Image 1: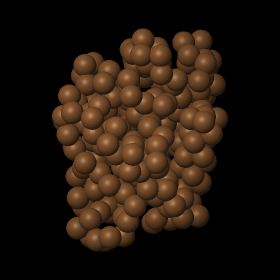
Image 2: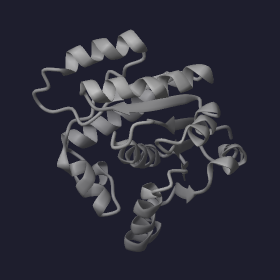
Image 3: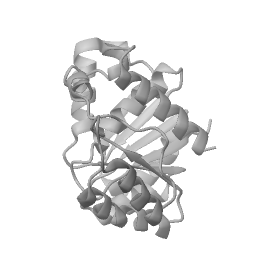
Image 4: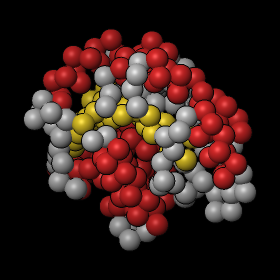
Length: 212
């Protein structure tokens, strides 16, 4: 078994990186894939969510494994997990170029969440340059998009000027994402027919297609 390896990376904090990593992990598990997620963010938010999930639901997360480790161990751990799973998702740290570089280097695709604001778009350049230096393809995902985001189309143009790989799927600015994680769940588990669940499902499919 050789896994698809996805690194969720963003040098700017607060972009929704861990929320995206957790939801993608659950989406792929729900699709019947075995998933390993690796948390190398010092805040360990992904690991805390998984511990809550295990405590509340036991084996409800069957097929999903989340582990935390230091970045210098990442290469060997990814290689090991890739032999045993269909998907490996790495939640990389912000503001830590060395560990982020290690996380990016081993990926099949780097997923970069970006909020549709000028400051967030400008701050994304560092992550895109890091992926380009490692020659790893990138998919930029607009995240927390307001219902009436007048700036969104302009921001997409700016992102495409920097880097052409902008996802067709956008994630809305929805309270349900955080509310689901607070329960140790994902949106598709708490409200499977919600717009949020549809967004995550579409994003997971788009990422899978792009990584082929």
